[in-house]
Length: 122
Image 1 (cartoon, rainbow, N blue to C red):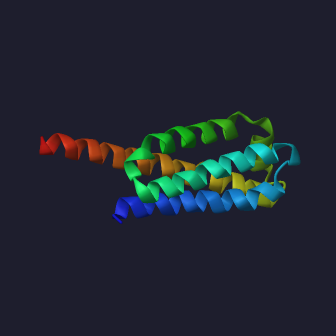
Image 2 (cartoon, rainbow, N blue to C red):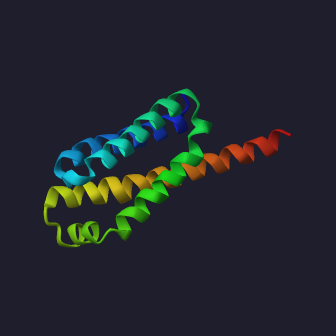
């Protein structure tokens, strides 16, 4: 496994772990949505282990959607700005911004690198 693939897989696993921690402490009315989203990240881990290039664009799209969703939610903004409850704020900030940002930037970097390498070899 290449270093780039390991980095993406570690980030995706970290996001999944944060999601598993966040599901029980989140709002019960969004449990189904949270489980579906976590399932998507688990599928992305499996696909990234198999063929990294198939997951780069979906990684970027999902990371952007999660960041926008967290930013657009008044309840999430309130939790993150007041740190009440603290556990939710930590999960939202780390899982919803830091790890998603890392996923997006790393996927962009690898996508750009792969595209550049392809042009060099032709």
